[in-house]
Image 1: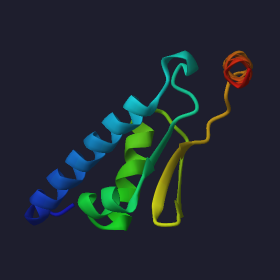
Image 2 (image 1 turned 90 degrees about the vertical axis):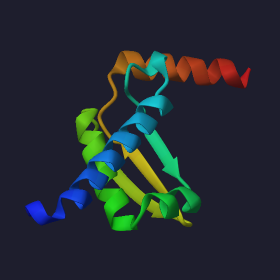
Image 3 (image 1 turned 90 degrees about the horizontal axis):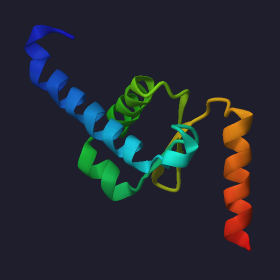
Image 4 (image 1 turned 135 degrees about the vertical axis):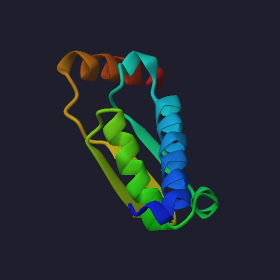
Length: 103
């Protein structure tokens, strides 16, 4: 990024940090960092800036967390998902927790 666009670079870095923090907060400890997802509604997106910038920052934040990040815009909401392969042990624990919650 050109030096003259330093304020834009700093804004982008702050957005990455904010999204990374939100992504971490959305993780459940028992999933050991897997099954990551963040859903930003239209109000969140409007507050954070242009859609393309938010999407780019979300992907970068995901890379910081070692996610295989995908983003999907559905009905005005941005879904940020970790598409990594989940280890069988974690998948089994999550399945057991879901089954217990349904009982």
